[in-house]
Image (tube, rainbow, N blue to C red; front, side, top):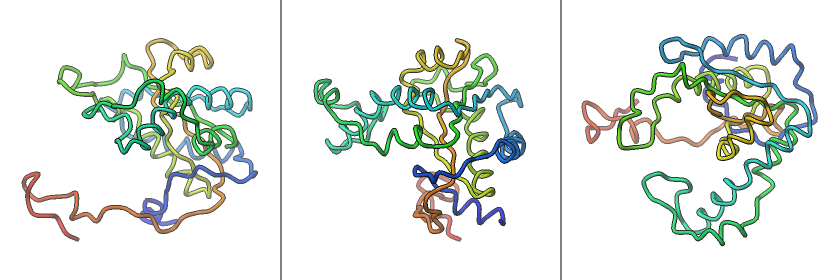
Length: 221
């Protein structure tokens, strides 16, 4: 496929067929994805390839507390897990919110799940002292994850970035033997999508790109 076709048709795949994702295909995806940039080119990411059904099921369970709050906030009209606007939903409501299968089934049913961690001793978190949630250190791991998804699309597979298990990072560390100096960045299910989307809905460029200042004229194409 042409690069721009891959970029325009790589979507968040959450439903997979029973087709396997062979090691040789996954190896090709990872071998190309590794050329993603990272802060200072320190390449601090570590990926655990998971095929064991019991491990995948446990990972999906770790994400359930996060999903409960996410769903409860959505039902209340809130923007879930937003750091600027704290939730007003009570703990009791969150605890009694059901976990939709769509949030856990991708991890349980995908032929391969990747647990992606990043070594905090090797990231450059230049925003660590600002009075807001840090985002810069993600640049040392998320480009790699996106390259994996682009590579999967090129090979006829797909997946999605999930972060629900991050709330239970200590349990994930214990399950997978991840050292304390590593932060869990994402759990990525990969497989052959039941349906391949070819038309994605995204904002036009002029709606989020401006000239010279934040409030400048929209950059049209």
